[in-house]
Image (spheres, rainbow, N blue to C red):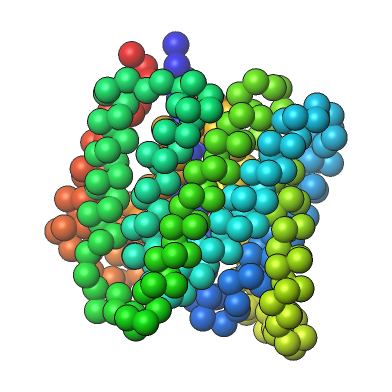
Length: 300
């Protein structure tokens, strides 16, 4: 009997990323993408290591190849992918950046089929298609705030596609390590984050930001707390849950359900007083139908 722990973990991660996205959208106007990625990574690493110590989980009790796959997953998915996504977020705005992210789940499923031999039946592929269609329908809606300068689109689309490919590759590399070993998602999340932060440091050195920008978040209590809050939800809890989903569910399903963050943003937006259109509601219903089909396909 399928217990759906992987699917529920992926949906939980999407919910936490939805909460964090509201914070990142504002932080991105104050902090450079590379620095924002570094700060959230450092906060999450501290939280994960503290959790490992409390739970007495051995950090280095891992054979070389899974450790290598997880490290590469962190380099590609977090070090490069998250930085590219924050750049796309600044250039395109949240809706267009997230629209490009909907390409990651089918790409993950294709890569998992090629490199891991994971086969998905037609019902599962239909569920993936409906979920992505619904999410894309929601986030492609035109809004007054969605206008961006045309000269930034080319860079934004490039960064968005890079982030999409990096996330798909990172997910499959994680699945390679988690699928065949007893490594816990907590340990795998920690390894990925450490590798991701170590990737950011040389990129930061090459970028050579002015020294006063490095400590800017620490100069504002409000900004510093916002970074900690976003890192707690998106990176500490989000990546831990994402690794859990990749361990317990096929990569294509895990990535599809993890990409449903825009659906969770809708009730948050309504609660904050924003108008939720009929189109957004219909798109959410289509995506929910796809999610239901994914659960049914796994139970059958």
